[in-house]
Image 1 (cartoon, one colour):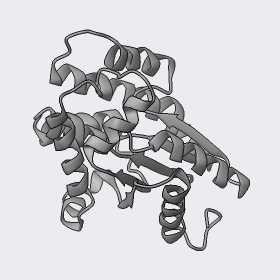
Image 2: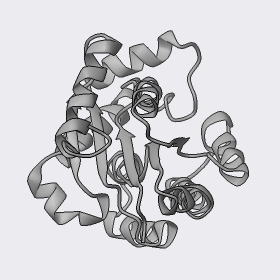
Image 3: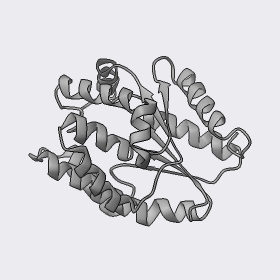
Length: 218
């Protein structure tokens, strides 16, 4: 039985997940939490190799192969890093998880959601996040931010229409109706990702403190 907390940061390209994860890790560590930060795909030797294939290669990867590669990375990460940390009572901050699969491979690539749900059940062995913080902003704004970082990975190079579908999907995921139909994703809180890093972080911390007002995270 896991005793720690799994907090996922999600959102479209350029939403600032990596920055907010770093800021959140620093704040929670200062509060006395033992914090582990990991990302998808990656976080293990196998996962990092898969990340190279998925994001940094020029390979022609069909949608089903793409989804299964993400699942393979996820299975290794859950088994080798996330569950041991949770069992030790640590707080795990994860950059992307199953919600991204529904957004990118489901809505974005058009794969059947029931197939993705079944594959994810194998990859996660039933692990459900305690909270997902969903950072939202328009697709074109996020892609412009990503461009400012320099270069585009394989996912970022997809057409604008793809990223617009992903952004709309994420907005749907925050609705109570969608969450009731998808308990495997756990609770999801929508956080506006526009504005400065500090302003967004204030919103992230507000979501954390609302979820655990009387805990060591508060």
